Length: 292
Image (cartoon, rainbow, N blue to C red; front, side, top):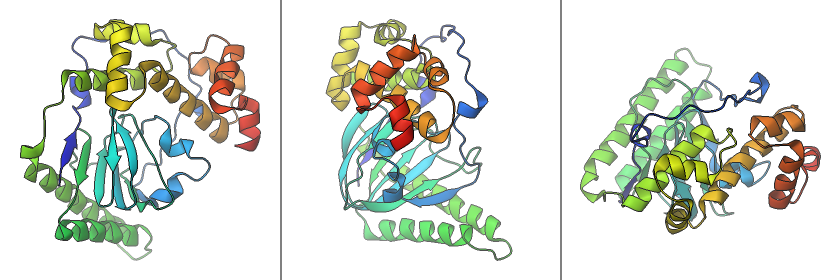
């Protein structure tokens, strides 16, 4: 079993953040994450469009992905690598990520809800679980959580929380057991991790790659080069992907006018937003809202 660990968000900034221009976000346009834990089959995450899993985005709750079968590529904290069967990926709240879901991909996504009080890793973890006993243990815990979440028996909510506590212990033990395999991230990967953290914080601000590069103390050219090396995409594509994921989410999940969504996401005008959306998605925002 091998472990990939991205630096925690608290380490992404070397200096206090500069003030950001105010962006008014309508309450109805804000992500509404269910507060309770839940388990969703991974193939179901892509229902309504593969963009829901493949485009860059972050969640407001921690999540564990358990890939029981299949393979593909995943970008986590600005680093792209392959995943396969029996891979467990822990994603803290606020960490940008996206992953492929092929027809042979099976597994579960354990969403831990907002404000979870169980002990969890502070940084992203990619665990390649090769031991059969560890695989069976995790699968059993997830099945137990799902059973209690679906149950109407007395105490099922407490039972689910206790099983989630066992899940956190499983994670803690796996991380601890393989600390010796963790390689220190290169300077390039640390820079991309810092960029994706800033991007997640400020993608609604209208900042461009040059603004992020200036805050990171590098040139836009260097930032784009290390992004290509780390995840195969330039810095501008990561930024646009994050903004347009949010645009698609708002178009499909809210009734906010297109001009309000454009302003919310920092586009200079609704017309520019429409052109950028059409160039990337192949539909205008209004067409996407009607057809999905």
